[in-house]
Image 1 (cartoon, rainbow, N blue to C red):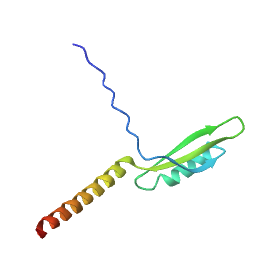
Image 2 (image 1 turned 180 degrees about the vertical axis):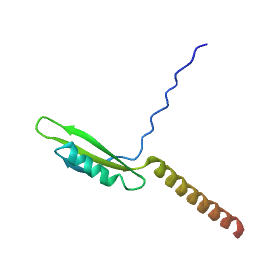
Image 3 (image 1 turned 135 degrees about the horizontal axis):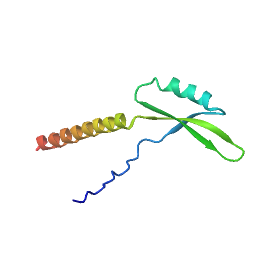
Image 4 (image 1 turned 135 degrees about the vertical axis):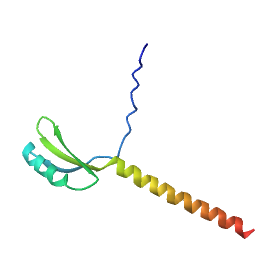
Amino acid sequence: MISENIEAAHVEGPPWKIVGRFPTFNEADQKRLELAMEEDLQVKVHWQGSFNNRYFAVKTRTDPAATLEEDRRLQREQKKRRKAKLSKKRRKK
């Protein structure tokens, strides 16, 4: 029996935004811990640097699961509006 490895396609989430840049990891980690208390917010520390400009960036974004649920809610509202508008047109005849 041959088992196939099927990889799930990577789904892009909302973009990451840089909240702060710090020269040391400890400073960046403190900021990350502050922001981690917020609900539906993902936080990470990312090393960024070039030859002369090296720093740790603290990045945040809204949780993709929360964003997905918000998108679904908006789609449902739009669908309700379209249906109401269509039924209103049908009643006029």
